[in-house]
Length: 150
Ligand code: 4NP
Image 1 (spheres, rainbow, N blue to C red):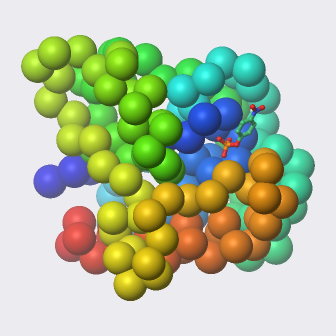
Image 2 (cartoon, protein in one colour):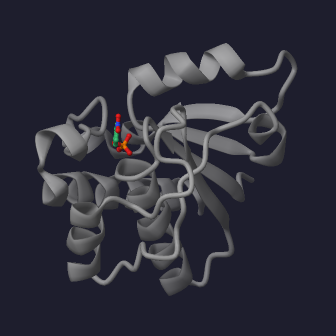
């Protein structure tokens, strides 16, 4: 079972904190116990709360991202989590560079859990400015992940 889940994006202020907040809310609603965290491959925003526009869009759907603070992913995360879920191929490539040999975590792409959407990555709303589109996709992926976790 993959009960310790880490979401990873580039800055840890838009996509991965949204994934963390959405999955936590959905899991709580279903009574599923999961340990969930998020991190960025970059360190520019370490210590910062999620991006204001992202927080606002999430809050409008009932997800409170305000307590979250950005951190950078570490090699230790590959031991501390069962499943590390990236938002795009670039995140996967950055993760592969710090993945310790023999570490046990499974690494996956979030959109793999929502094949019906046809998406092969979660577009970065920091650049697209489509915060609601990001949340739509994140919600689909979180539903698919929960279904797979049983
Ligand atoms: P995220 O978006 O990876 O979804 O958190 C980004 C936010 C900020 C930056 C990059 C991506 N940045 O370079 O500042």
